[in-house]
Length: 162
Image (cartoon, rainbow, N blue to C red; front, side, top):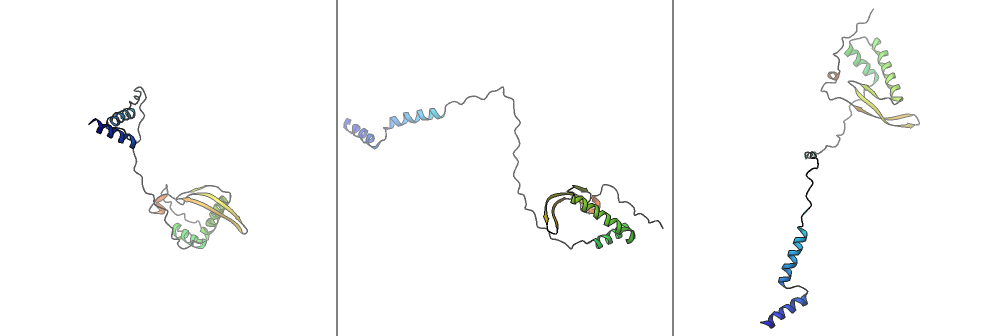
């Protein structure tokens, strides 16, 4: 038997593996090294509130806007006449004056806050040969009816004096 054990020891030594008894002792020393005690957390540290985990939400991409018919000044005047109940000859100069003031404000890169139309900011501009191109951002309040977004109750139409 002594010869057979010595042969098994020799064969294991040649293959580069250690006998089983050495493997167990090495494995236990490795596990002791990896399971070394971690330093205890200080107990006097102030507790920091932990934020709740929020589930991620999917954000939809902006939807393309289907452009409706263009609103021209003549149609705007007609709509104001119908809504205000005033004569066209009285409404037209007021609408033209309002459009002129809005055009000047946009030319000066002013931010407009005109409810229920919304808040208008000029983002970019580009000088062209025949004018100026302005890219503006308009933020409108959420309202089902555009006339319902006003803070004040609807004013009674003014009666023209004759």
